[in-house]
Amino acid sequence: HGASMEEIARRSGVTPPVLYDHFASKLALHKRLLERTRDELLAMWREHLAGDHPAEERIPRALDAWARYVQTHPYAPRMFFHETTGDPEIAAIHREVADEASAALGAILGQEPGAEHIAGAADPLAFEMASEVIRGGLTALAIWWSDHPDVPREQIVATAINAVWIGFERVRRGEAWTPG
Image (spheres, rainbow, N blue to C red):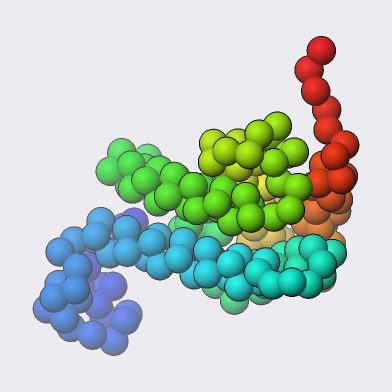
């Protein structure tokens, strides 16, 4: 947040004019980094959740790919998952990118057999709500892991599987809580 465009250019190995050729401001650069991270994560989810293999194989594979992404992109938990600058423009950009990610994750989730049981309906809003629960848990875990880098990835994946997948699997089989 406190770095100047000149410092960013220097640390990137380019001159400030080159940086300005691509980004009009730090805000534009920040937005593009958020969008790139979102797009990489969505591509990762699509790749690892797709296929004809049973969900018992695809879900752990996808969660392991997510953990590898978080591990190899140490900036991601703070920049993408938890921005706290207090700047309203940055907050608005984060909300916009997060909303787009949430809708896309809801669409991905909606392709899973039995997903309509999670939120009680087979519509985009229900899938988006369910994906927010999953995303929120994984986001918190990513932030926690960035503060505890000594925890092995395998333990992070096991925690994510136990917290996210096992409950999801029960709902997919038709078990669900209903008010009343």
